[in-house]
Length: 113
Length: 113
DNA sequence: TTGACACATTCCAGTATGGGCATATAATCA
DNA sequence: TGATTATATGCCCATACTGGAATGTGTCAA
Image (cartoon, rainbow over all chains, first blue to last red; front, top):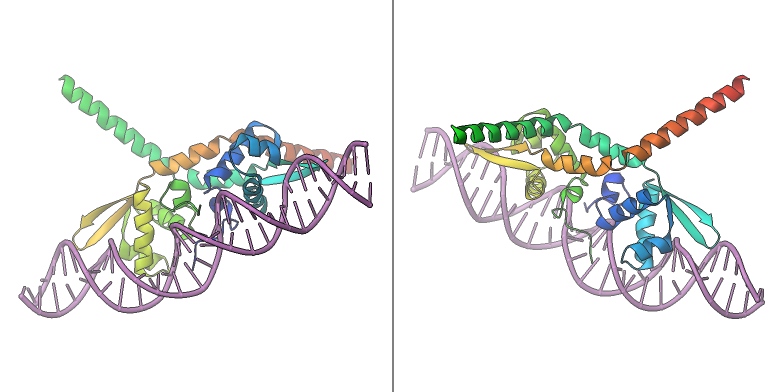
């Protein structure tokens, strides 16, 4: 079997750095045309269009036509899925972080005494 | 240019479903040997070892030798990075969700009157 | 209708993947 | 030491990806 399709789910879709960049740009500005994205990123137009197609098929963006151009906007619910998945492990990293902190404080105390 | 390496960052590493499964298993049990993972998942041992190698290179797991077997355990900080990235968009999806809810309530009110 | 513009799509090349299989390596035991 | 167990690694194949170049498609203006 080969690597899963980028369009198979949100996890695969956001693995690509350019697509995460697009997501950030769409989050900052309410909606962007393809041309605006091309200008903001340093990527050729066909590449941007392809990335947008991936994001569209996994439901992370929507399109609307406005004259000659198309406006893409973010559909953030898909990102919530990622967030929820990671939240599963929140206790683990906070516990670990507090342990690291405790160790550091204990070490500092030992040095002071 | 080709697709980014699975080992290039945490986002690419967790794109693969088996690797997410391994992460969940390691979160449930404190630590697992390769054999335990092989048994829990329905994947051959070499495949599991390769997935673990990917997770190791991106820093999501650590290994320790215990006799003949090796115990893998989760290093959850890497997952915090994912969580933090997604948190960036939290306002957007909560806003959208409340809007959807409002619309639903308004529609229900219109039907009632 | 023709031309120009904004995007989308197709084809190509180079690369890397994930699983299966065989095999190498490390550690324990008789 | 030799055998066995527990993993890791190397090789192969089919698959899929990303970017570039060229081309198709839809919309607007004159």
